[in-house]
Length: 358
Image 1 (cartoon, helix red, strand yellow):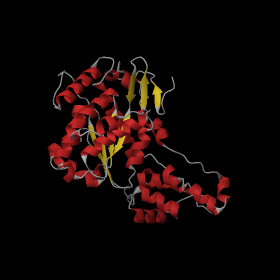
Image 2: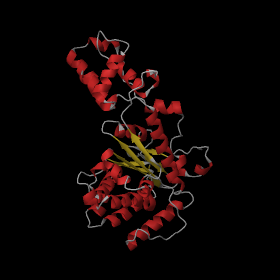
Image 3: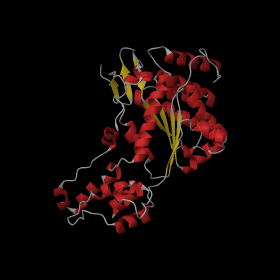
Image 4: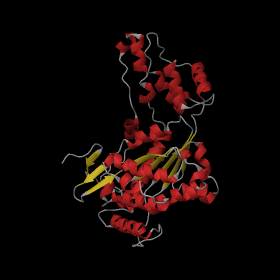
């Protein structure tokens, strides 16, 4: 059988963690990486051939432009993010084990909700959600989306379990719609599943006049039908508080995704999205059950700090190596580093673009 692109056949490995044992959805995932292994997995090294510095200027421009998308330096913040996603992904599967029937119970509850139109309806009351949510906020250019994409790329997106005749979607990443409505967000969910599986859920569910609650019930059923491991919702600052019914209703929507669908949700956005989670302590706790990550721009090291042991130092040191010049300097001066910081204010995307354009 030829598997679709992005799908692999399940190979089960013991995780060494008692809570995860006997759960095919977890044991089919890649082994939990060690610190050094993770850095190697996230790193990307661009080839810098010595002969390239003698090429024609127009040709070198194309080579230098590789840095815009290809340069990535793993930092402490990336390790923390990977660790949280790794835990959320595996913990979310603890309550949805296809070998014990827990997932079937979730599916039966989902069918009951669709039939009754009530998101609180259930057929099996012993089924608990082990899913958590994470709010991931950072300024534009801080590398949120590119970092998430690299971390998710360390997992296969889909796993086929021949023994259970089951297809598992490990992660699903969707973008918030520009019109800012929750209904369009649900449509994007169906559209993304269609794009990776070749199904037609947008036509079957999206084109009918379902309300947001009915959409969530349908999303819930699909999320459990394919055992989605983690749902990443990017650009949540596009959600319009007015059109979505206010911050409280929007927060209820995200909480319902986690509690009723039982799928871990990572909400990614710029600081414009913070009002959704900061109305009060109760809202913050509900909206970010597994905490929140706030990515500020890189800090400028203090005068007495060892520059090479700081994130700013490690980032600029690696970037400085990529020079296609015949008279390139091996070492970067403190004055130039200070100038870079003044012009970029520690925003990594701006630093890379300044370097490439100069």
